[in-house]
Image (cartoon, rainbow, N blue to C red):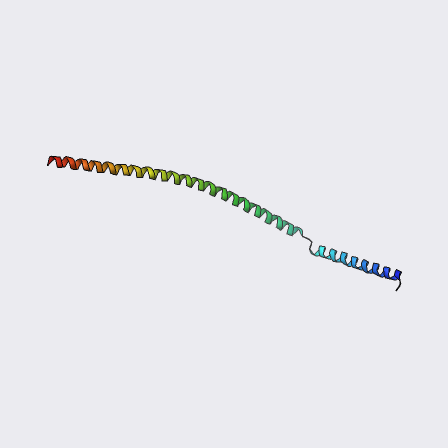
Length: 110
């Protein structure tokens, strides 16, 4: 085999390889082509995902607002409880003072 025949044989092999590669690519692109129904389904799924994320964000915002509101109510209730406890302590002291005063008066009358 001389040099010219060798070059022609290599060129033919490369051309056949190129043609087979192109044919394989064309066949795969035909097989894996996305149909319009698939695109519509993907769009519907994307819209559903977007709606779900929006709903999640709204729920998160509502929960944060509710938590802030309940925290405020808890703080107010705790403040009222402290005030009531202080008032009760003062009332007990006053009651004890009055009881002692009455006992002293009753002892003085005996």
